[in-house]
Length: 310
Picture (tube, rainbow, N blue to C red):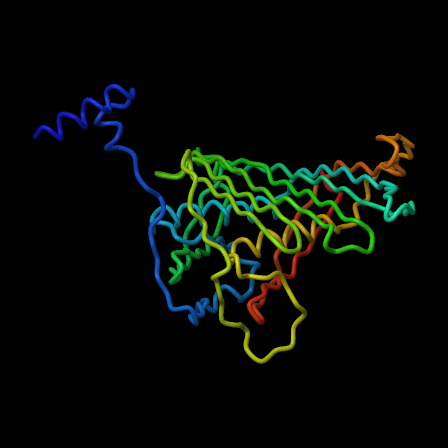
């Protein structure tokens, strides 16, 4: 009894009522698997992508939370197919570095890429669902427009990459997806950030206002379709979703846009860095996912980008 009174007083002194504390919930939970375990992915994940959209949650989540996150990511793919606004800034630099008293020059590229999207006035229906041993939820949905639909999903995805010529170890990247939704019971907003370089990556995930524990370097997926020789895709050791988002944004960053504005600025950022050229893009594109495969724990996705539409 004394402990309960002390706990209640502590909550009041901290500005949190007991009822508010009871309403708070935890979104993640522990999942255990053997070190040699490989997740068996559902066959529908690799089927025809024309009639439905699929989404995958982060690992380690409570099932109902994971399901809503997966649904939002499926709607994100729907938004890509409907059309998104793209903005890109790409700078080429001439960098001078001194090594053992000798000045060496090399080219360096910095790319900033963002896309904005919004989905409203739609309804969706769940066709398939798969729960993985890692606590991921996979969903496939159909989407149709409905003027009576009041829910909304909006957000921004960003990609940044810095590459030094002929030096893969001096490559850094930052991948972000930030979404808000008004059509779900639990998940109102999600934030996902993957940043790093060729050796190390750091993943930050947040649902509503809670930052989540996101263990890395432990996810393995059985290859599908079996027995086919495919090109290498994105490494999946940091989860299926991490590889999927990487695949999308790297493909978009390499797309050749029609509406490119080229500027030769000649700006100097100090004695060692000089800007040679800047490319600016503002466009609208549709992005289609025509199929995917898993081979050697790498995810390959056949993205198709259709650009320059209004």
